Amino acid sequence: MIPSPTNSVTELERYAELAEWQPEIARSRDAAVRLMRCSDGELPDLLAAARAAKERFKPGIVTYSRKVFIPLTNLCRDYCGYCIFRRDPGQPGARTMTPEEVLAVARAGEALGCTEALFSLGDKPELLFPEMRAALERLGYKSTLHYLEAMCELVLRETILLPHPNPGLISMGLMLETTNAELMRPGAAHDNAPDKAPSKRLRTIAEAGKQKVPFTTGLLIGIGETVEDRVDTLLAIRDLHRRYGHIQEVIVQNFRAKPEIAMAEQPEPSHGEMLRAVAVARLLMPKVNIQAPPNLSEPYYDDLLDSGINDWGGVSPLTPDYINPEKPWPHVEQLRRRTEAKGFELRQRLPAYPEFLPALMAKPGLLSERLHAAVDQQGLARRAA
Image (tube, rainbow, N blue to C red):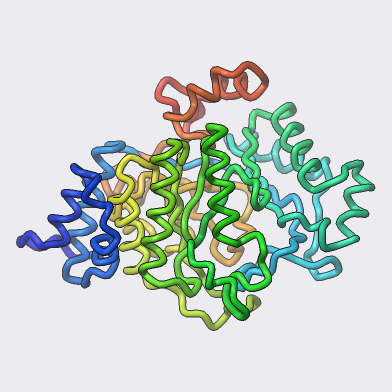
């Protein structure tokens, strides 16, 4: 349980209010770090300021995207210390989906009211594994990206679902995770994971901005970074958004340990650390959608609503979270009840947020047709949540 705000106005509360009304105040890295390090006694005031900032941005509602998770291939050339998803060829569970399997999952999700097909896959596995090159040749494609493109087109053509591809460095949603390149050192979280270099990820996010692509990014806390690193990552994202205006969503995700991973003994971030990170993200970016996965903060995920989120991210009524399979998503009705208990209405959105839809819908083509058919007058999903 989170205690009630104190009656006294703390320095941190004053800063938080100023950061909302005068965003230039929040340029101070040191001040943001102080917020992230606030005491338990000061935390309620920080959360109250963050929740108020959320309400000024998008009052009364919290959104989610009803999706199916399509793990196109779990072969990957990167070896992140926290990942349970990736496989080498021949390992138990290693697989690449066929077009028939992809379409079957998409159609099943369509029947359950989903509007998003989230494609997750390893990064350029054919560069490391001849087995993947052979599999692609059998399917009739030269690269994993070409195969992904074809599967996105298949889902868009044959169903009402909107594809959301996450193929590593050229994803529609690419977690920055951290700006600390030291986490690529031997034994650290991103050791032997060349695609996790912060410079590469920042370049990708910037390129998406130049192309005016609505983009999802975020930070991953608890992988060996410092509080200062968390603030630096948020500031880097904010700077990119100020430059290009294309960051549609910032995810604050917490590391969860698993027995099978290299980082099995790494301490998980506390619930309080998660609340602080989300609240500071909201105050640094008061007019950006802030999201946190509910399944990774169970059983207290509804506390995240007090820290300024306005979105739960993708929640599937059909497929598991293949990245964190031990942490099932809450049932949508449970999510609704707990969201309403905090005073918000739960609404289903499309993979793109309402403020980014007009530009996408203005471009002729099948995607625009699908968006027009799926969206309501508020820019949210036409089908009831």
